[in-house]
Image (cartoon, rainbow, N blue to C red; front, side, top):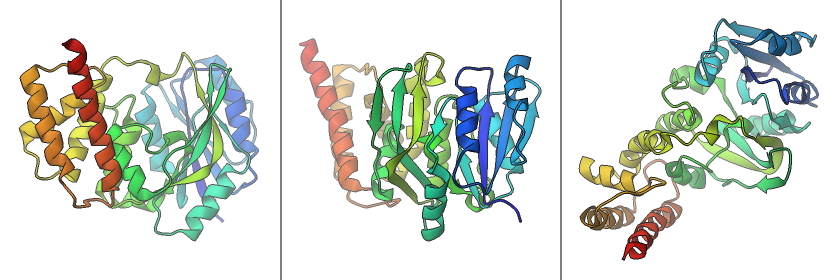
Amino acid sequence: MAPRISVLFPVGNREIYLREALESVLAQSFTDFEFLIIKDGLEPNVESIIDSYRDKRIRTIRLPINLGLSTALNAGLRVAETPYIVLMDSDDVAMPERFARQYDYMERNPGVTVCGSNFIKIVNDGPRHPCRYPETDALIKARMILVDSAIHNPTVIYRTEFVRKYRLQYDANFPRNQDYRFFVEMMRNGASFYCMQEELLLYRRHNANITNDLDGIDEEKGRIREIILPLYFPDLTGEEVRLLLKSQCQQVTMTVLEAGHCLAVINKALRENRTMRGEDRAHLRVILQGYADALIQAFNRQK
C-alpha cells in the first residue's frame, strides 16, 4: 500500500544539524511515510551525509544546481504520492510523536486543510523558548496580515488533494516569505487552518537562517499584504491600500500629511465589520489599532 504522508525535506549546502534533523524524521513513531529529500545543488560532503542513510522510505530528488527553497519544495510537491504533505527543515528536530499527532488530527477533522503546531525555538544552541501560535482558523487568518506569527511553516501538515486541485506552488519571488505567499493563496481558495497547542518541533534560529537577512523585507511583506488587504477591506481604494501598506513597514517613512491620511484610512478599515474569509474581525481591529498607535507615537517623538 502507498504511504499516507510525504515528508518534504529540502537540503541546501549546510551540514550543521543535518544528521539530527534526518534522524528525527526516521525515528517518528508514525512510520507510514515517504521521505522526500530534495538535494538542492549539494556539495559532496553534504550529499554524502544523506547517502549514508539506508531506509526504504527515503526517496531523493537531485537538483543539479542550487535553485532555492521554493524550487526545491515544488520539486517535492510534483512527485508526492500521498494524501498529506508534511514540511520539515534540515536544521530542525521533529518530536517523536509529531507525525502521529498531526495525521490523527487531520483524519478526524476533514474540514481542516492545514494543521500546524506550537514549537520550541532554540537560539544559537542556547536558550529555548516555547512559542505559542493562534489556535483557530479565524485567529490565524486575522494574523496573516502580519506576514508573521500566524502559522509556522516548518510545523505544518496539509492536504495534497487541495494543492493539486488549485495547482498551488511556492513562489521563488518571495525568498523569505514563500510560505506566507503560499498560505495566502490557500486561503483565497477556501482553505481552513488550525494550530495544535502542543510543541511538536524544535525550531532552530542561528546565523545561517535566511530570515536573518532583512534587506528588502518590507517590500516583500508589502507584496503579500497587497493581496490580503483587498480581501479583507474591499471598500479601500488603491491609494488607500498604498497608504495602509506604508504604515505596516518596520521603518515607517511618511510626511505629516501622509500620516494624517493614513490614520483616516485605518479608521475606515476599523469600521469594516464584515467577515470576508472567516477571519476574526475583532483581532484584526486590534492589529490595525496597533499600526495607528505606532504611527502616532512615531510622530510624537519627532516633535
